[in-house]
Length: 144
Image (cartoon, rainbow, N blue to C red; front, side, top):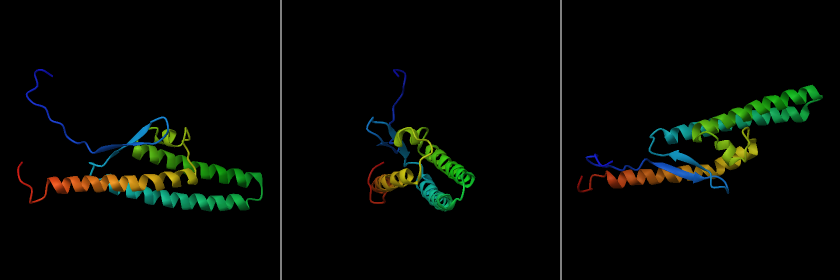
């Protein structure tokens, strides 16, 4: 570092969110201008998948034999596994394991609780980032 001409430090926009009692966290990068739209798209996708899982749950309740029940459970499990993969893809590897205590195919209750808690955090982080941008780059600002 002694040969460095200068040094800069930039706010990367990464917000760490503690997700369990062990102190594990997930990171949100609100400096990514596509972050919020990708988050909203994932929430929309998740709602569609949860509705599909409910339909399968209804089939499970009306199943007449073990074969129908097994088929419905396998179909529902596939949905929850994909939901877990999408959560991990968006929030980072092992997010489900950290948040849900090792569960990689979280059910509707776990996913619902997660999104109920994470959504206001995401909205606040995005709002704060917007305010920082507005205060730094408004036309009344003086200086570089």
